[in-house]
Length: 135
Image (cartoon, rainbow, N blue to C red; front, side):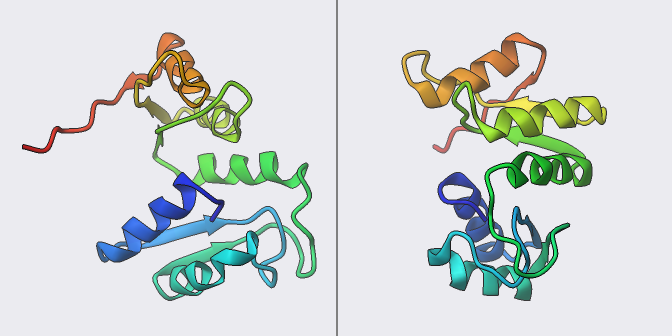
């Protein structure tokens, strides 16, 4: 449910009639980020919101790597679309590899910091993912 690609992915899944799960780094009674309150309501209607933290737990930075562990554990495959070198996506990918999940990565521009993590994953054995082109 994070800002950026996470929120867009949940929204796209819901808009296409899919089921989505949000793993939180805080209690389920708090919306983080706050601007995603409507998204959280939609996820609850079309999936689930899960947290290992008790109600009232604030979104402390140390909670997010633990949350990423759950994302990897619940996944059969993990697709990383963009990631800088210190990204939470790389933490999730490391857990996915540890849990013997397939890790796929989209190649990125070598000059963009948001692409370095994906390119590093591919270099280290992640499956190269090339989206189908739209004609």
